[in-house]
Each structure stands twice: as C-alpha cells, then as structure tokens.
Image (cartoon, rainbow, N blue to C red; front, side, top):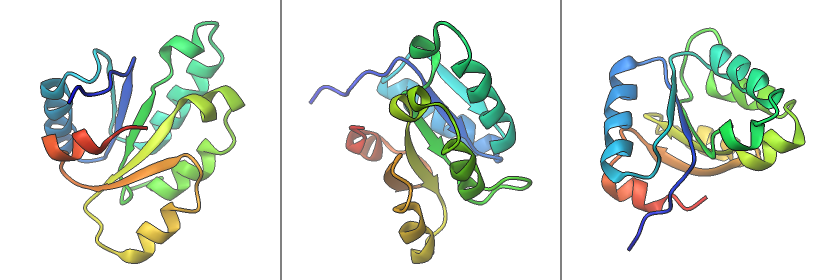
Length: 135
C-alpha cells in the first residue's frame, strides 16, 4: 500500500528527542520532503500565523500537524484554541494528529471536540501508526 504524500508536515513537541525520533520515522516513511519542527506550541502558532499571511500560504502551510498535549507555556489544547482563530485557509489545509504519551481518556475525549483533530496516536510514531494516517 502506497503512503499518501504530503507537501509539508509539522511536529510540535517540547521533547527534542521525541521530535528527532518522529522526524526520522517520517523521513523513513517518505511521506513528505518538508518537516517543520517546533519545541513549543507558542512558536508553532506564530509560525503558522506568519505563513498564512504569505502569498504562497497554500503551498507552505503544513498538511499535517503532529501535536503533543503536555507542554510547558502553551499545551496542546491551548494550541488548538489558538489554531481555531487562524484563517479559513489554514484551518482547511492543516489537519491535526494528536501525538501524545497521555493515556488519559479525558484527553482523547477533549481532542474530539476540535474539528481539525483527525487522529489520536500514542508516541512515538511507528511505521504502523504512519500507515494509519490518511487525513
């Protein structure tokens, strides 16, 4: 089965080792040539705000955002609240995959309240979990 190819994906996780592992898994699966990595949700949301102002926003906004929940300063749910304020283009283009070590069922239920959250996966990414991504 051929994996879907994305123009760009984004990793948002305060743990740099998790970001590196997930980046390597994405590279090995060859689902994209462009991976944006952020160690904070605040910098990621600012990055998206800047990108959506560009004339080439359609080409540079990530198709998939892998989002951790438990992060300092701004957690994954606060990111989702800020994401809701982005332009219709950004909200249409970017689909979000919650990528977390949280096994709290309340986190899973809460993530369902956001229309852009398409999948909930446990860390780290594996080849099997990448195969499930069709958003």
